[in-house]
Length: 415
Image (cartoon, one colour):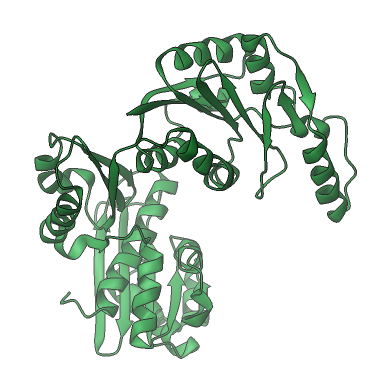
């Protein structure tokens, strides 16, 4: 089985708290080709440090993919580091320069000296087209090894990997095992709660289980490789069944579809429409809803009503409710949802109101308290969540839980 290394380049990426989106994406794509990632490194924007990391990666892997350092500024030195390692030069690729000039002209911008750096490739290498950005990738082969240089911006990285790299690797390494993949989206539970379902799969031959947790949502992937796995298709079906039985109502999809995508599918199946009212999430719920392609077929609109006056005037929340129950209460959450549903004439509405912090909490309602209201045909439910954390995380978690409870209500779960 061919092996691969992934090198993340960028001084900002050396921060342990900085999440990398490209590595998990590349790992799964490579596994589908029967190429296993066995080395991952993060390195700052320094020519020697990059060259040293690449030297180590190339020694132990058949394929090395980098992420970052291909932009136009002085700290983008990945190409120079590779040139130094290979004792080669760096040249301007004429074909990509033509494309770069045309794209900038369409935007009314001239090409600059710095901008030309985005058309540079290491001598002996080939430019890889970037349909999502301006910097081309680089494909190089040395001593039977493949080195691929890609931009760090996730949409650009994924575009070049999918359209320019994977088919080349498939041709370069034609002998590969059968691979089956199960991609599950799970919501409403922490990672530890999924562990009981996943634990029996960790030591099965040829089965790799990965979990990508975010706030309120888990992305779980089973990659089954045969050999060494026996009967990959059977194992794939067993994995699907185990996830469905073990995760139950928290299993959103088994095809990798996101929570907003599955919510949209369910609304369309029901012929329903949606409106949103938000306070503590500040529009994040609506942003997630419209992130799914085709949202215009069911999403009518949203109201972000942060101040109490706005809740009254825009959503019709009774002044008495705000005075007696408070802005953060099940009564207010439901009143906000009712108001949004009525104003947009929507089938369903969801609302959020809470204390995101870091201040504003009380003994009765500490920071991290959020109420979610869901209204629809024959449904009026409120849900409380309490997870004290930083403000941004609290907003993300609340938005994901709001979509999760809404999805369950729309599909007819008992709440």
